[in-house]
Length: 245
Ligand code: VOV
Image 1 (spheres, rainbow, N blue to C red):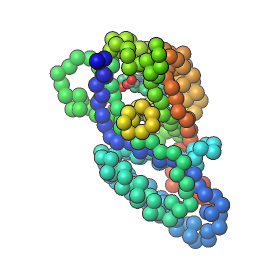
Image 2 (cartoon, helix red, strand yellow):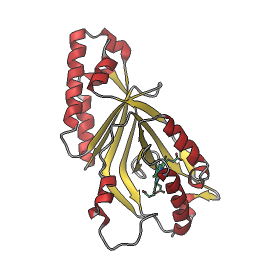
Image 3 (cartoon, rainbow, N blue to C red):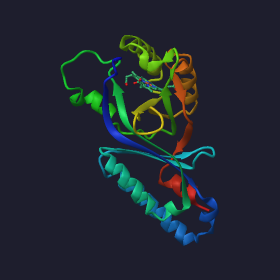
Image 4 (cartoon, protein in one colour):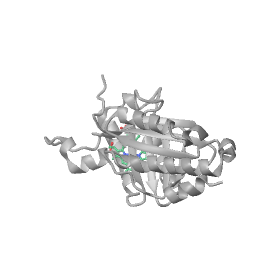
């Protein structure tokens, strides 16, 4: 059997995309809308009290109106958050459009040899249990590595995959300071193999990096992509504005 990469696995991740049912929301009285908005804001603020991290963005285009991304220590907590949201008044005016379940993941392709326990290394921990940035923009898409005839990532030797991932990492590193990436593994958990979540203060950088990577062999030959969703950072004030009629 071919050698599988060894993964380091961090927090569980839920990307929850919702659309707003504007037609129903507009019919509700101003008082009810205000109460529902306040309750929603309190829910979002409460999320910051638990161990984990959260990101909240409005989504551009018709695929969704907002995304709640939550990272937690256990799948149970992700389930609880989902249920807690479902019980809010605002939930009755939202339509689930897409969700993604995965786990923050690092592979050992570029890891040097060491006897230390990587889970105790502060740099590794910072990546497995990341604080999601408050960047202005987010880009999320799921992806797979191809298993198609001669283009089968999983049949490549460990050595070949290491070389290819090294080149991928070089391109990635040239975006240091412009893009923060969170790679979450989802084999066995959701419909694709990885979730890619990119954060930046310049939306153009998403287009730049994804385009540049398309010419890199890892993506050009082996990458297959799901839907792309992009959005703008939401804070309480922006959320109130978004929900105001
Ligand atoms: C923003 C910059 C950036 C940087 C620095 C970066 C670096 C790295 C390194 C060093 C490594 C390997 C070790 C590890 O850390 O796991 C990875 C791993 C991975 N990447 Fe990456 N990636 C970036 C960015 C980045 C993007 C934009 C994409 C989407 C690709 C595209 O074509 O749209 C991506 C994908 C992935 C995936 C799916 C994996 C897991 C592959 C696997 O087979 O296991 N990635 N990535």
